[in-house]
Image (cartoon, rainbow, N blue to C red):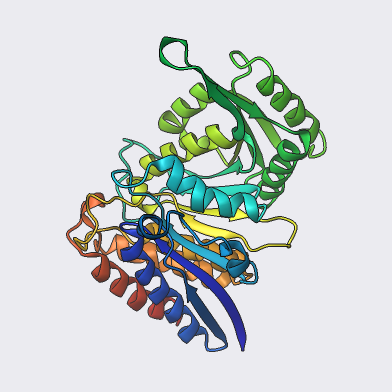
Length: 355
């Protein structure tokens, strides 16, 4: 019997609604497999925790998580109560940085059963590999003075080590896919870090002569994801550019509520963390209409990371089968509740695993 210890952080808003649904799917996967077991250790950290304790997670939070096989996160944020820079940096980013989760991977594909807002999406299927530890989100800078003399300085920090490992990861993924890597840059406007990014991309690409590679200015690349997303395979981008491009990816899929993501630790010292792209959506929390697909698809990525790729593929097959049957939440044109969609996915999972 294989057993995986998963640290669960439902977080805020709809995270507390979609997380239990994804856990039901994972339990169903374990039941179907027979030789698999999940132990879920749940942590009630987030904005409500902050309002009570003045911190998003306890001081020893990382030590409570570090021995798990993976971390499963729902959503973070409640901007009316806690500023976003407090909630995100106090939980999500703290875990990413503390556990050296230096790579973020977010897929975008035309799912069966969902109408993309694009007129002709042509079965696009690409991955964005985002450098996840430095770049534009580096904590270097500050504010001085006040009033009309106030100055804010934010420094982007790019290291060859950080940039190189993201690009290496992207090229290795491309070897398993369609053999094409596109780099997001802005070297015509950002005159130091982006030419450096381009130099490293050229150096890394020379090590993979069988992989086709191109470099695009990020504004043009964002437009191409709308006009011809089917032409891309693996995209590698800096922290900020990757964040923006993956929201475009979720949008052209049909809803930001369906996009998954993985924060990957490469050295094996700490667990990786899996989270959907969507936010906490406090405006719909408690209505039972949140789309569970993003969290469940994120669970599929976690299964893949744990080495259970066949089961992960079955989960995605079940998701697409249910969507094709028209069982959807309102954000993608359906009338089903959060629980009804999950119920259908579990039933579909039972049938696809019999094939």
